[in-house]
Image 1 (cartoon, one colour):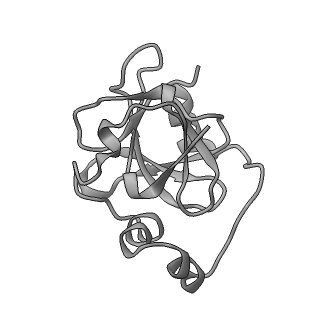
Image 2 (tube, rainbow, N blue to C red; image 1 turned 135 degrees about the vertical axis):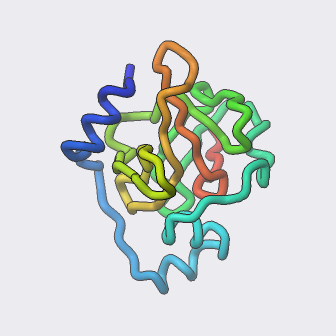
Length: 148
């Protein structure tokens, strides 16, 4: 099970290699994303809390990156965090998320990006439920729900 020490190790020493890489120009990303998804994923923005009903959806399935369709989270790892953003305890595999130390906004935290396309997804914190203790706090506009 992935834990906070491993997150910090990746953020400090580098991430695992993804299965593939997808790179597009800014113009290409703009042509396939909504304005809000582009702002969040390509410009490292944050959506308003409670702006998506994805927070309250707890159905079976998989969540993928909105930009490149890389499978990121299983719905069985989703939980109600009370933060206003969809939250998960674990990624599907350890190589689908990149961890980047983020010292913006006067605090230290760990940014999460899609390892396939570098889309900004959100942040991970060490205040989630056990046994992992992780809270992957994701922007809903950075994710798409994939049916089984």
